[in-house]
Length: 180
Image: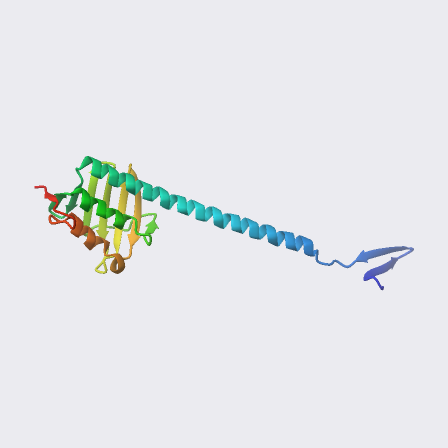
């Protein structure tokens, strides 16, 4: 029993059984493959996420371009209806591309909430909902008929109050035309 084998006699035949040792090369290969699959999954997830952000920002640019080109961007808040000048409309882009926005799959119930709607045409519009007194804002975008919902932290960005400033008759970057 010098070479770590166990011999047992069964009648006249001797059976030699080796003690099993862990096969370190197989364990190492399994670990490497597991890390590679995890890494590839992480990279693919990052690329897909970045692609979605890039597509969204391209859609925002097209939306802004259509509004500037048509010069008939209508904003509604309660009884107030204004036609935005192109400078105030373009300022909305900063609110739509806040990097800390959270994409949500389904919008919460918005019944009874204050809201602002900015419309370029029937397939391109925005709706901003004030969710609470902290000014957390739900932004519902519809670009080329595709809807997306985003939640933006209120106190930090004040999206709703800034939008009110842009769409008011005085505007921030020049006056907007009041529609009666």
